[in-house]
Length: 265
Ligand SMILES: Nc1ncnc2c1ncn2[C@@H]1O[C@H](COP(=O)(O)OP(=O)(O)O)[C@@H](O)[C@H]1O
Ligand SMILES: [Mg+2]
Image (cartoon, rainbow, N blue to C red; front, side, top):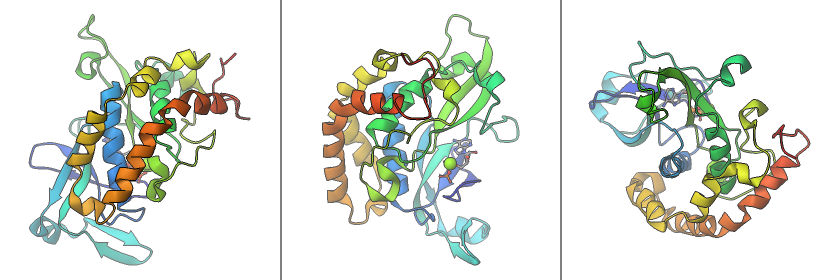
């Protein structure tokens, strides 16, 4: 797949296809931890994001599929067997078309466009140092829990991906610059007029259950942490404490020179 982490699309034995980021990816091992925690949190908030799995790659599989490897400059680097991060492709890649970008004319018709405002709350909270990324596909809305009154209706849905740079990526800090974490098209924030436009997500974060955080933490494989256990604990403690600053972070973004929220008063 395109992108700095050099993810690979791999069919797993549960029948699913996964975009897999490896422990020794060119960005950092911690990227996998970031992806995992952000995915659990997004699901809790009710924002669409792919199903995630911890994918086991055996030495036999890696031996038989040498193209599953990484490229560091001119050097080919093999993948260690064991646990890696998998983001599930929504369906069969030969039958379901997934787009990285939509032109504005289609983007404005995306059924869950409000999820971009919701995701910004998460990205500000978790200090995503990257721009927001999502994939798009045309699907039956009920399959994505979007429209239960018209079960057969189809439309474009946005699914949030690539949370590797929350916590400032490998740094595990919070840099909180007003422009970070935003999607590159302001159109997705249409209708954002004030802090209240970030409800119900702001409230959900302010009452975020520690159990959800603990559960995400417990699911992380030991090999992904490799001595980072204490630092992660510290980071998550800081994360709980910064929830009160969220409205201020959002206001800072609203005032930014690029006017990311066109309708903000
Ligand atoms: N769950 C998914 N389903 C379909 N395509 C995906 C999924 N996750 C990632 N991709 C595709 O793989 C590319 C690389 O994934 P991404 O998470 O953006 O990695 P990177 O950190 O390298 O940018 C994305 O641009 C997107 O096209
Ligand atoms: Mg990406």
